Length: 334
Image 1 (cartoon, rainbow, N blue to C red):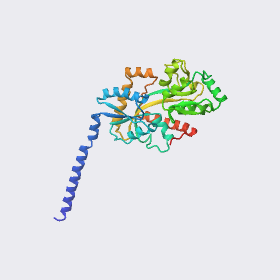
Image 2: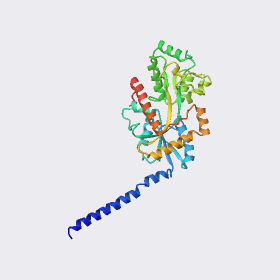
Image 3: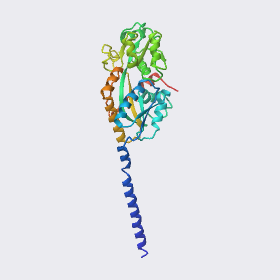
Image 4: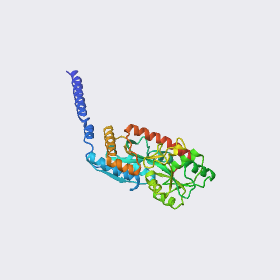
């Protein structure tokens, strides 16, 4: 009889283990059920730049339509600073439950990885790309007192007067800063970079003739160029834009030149795949509405329809491409 006790004890242990396993299996579907009920409370969208800019505008425009579709408000939280790094870090460190998202741009989620030596996150590893919400070309513009009406004429002028034709940007490491660096690298010219705090300040100095040249977001620069207050020489996209069909692309003179700013929606990296796919669907549906399409057209923004995986590949390619430009220009931000 004593020999049987261990046997019965083993059976009891196996029964307990079996019961525990059954309980674990019963509980396993709970995360999935939680995802099926997503969202059941407001969603925070961190914008890593100040209110009023293009990134903030797109977040509020698209977020409003997504709120209607999801049945929960998307609440914008502006956390500006360090070229977008402060807001991006807050997003990367947030719980990966789908209730904290963030906007990202070519600067915060591609360029910064190469120009900030102590960036507090990995732009590829720490985020789940959700959807590319829109893109717009940067526009090459010159002041009206500059004797250049085409890209070839501007290149000739810069070669004749090396280092004299300065160009402005909205800050070190922004897409319009690196557009200027790429332009000088491809043309073999030199120019002095003049950082400003905003596109508005760039336009003020260009309109007065104090700043000779700049690449700026199409939505910021084109209204002034359209009215003849500054001169548009080329768009940074590979194709001409419908809003300015007579303005050639810079690539028509410099093959391979492309400078396009973009804005996308991201989540922390461990966000469950069903939530990622749901947010991608709702974001793409939002930017496909006639109201948002019309507003995008006014601003010169193109709606993009990428899957989460395609968007991830796009961010990786942009990180590599602009990292090379930044390294050649030796751009570092402390």
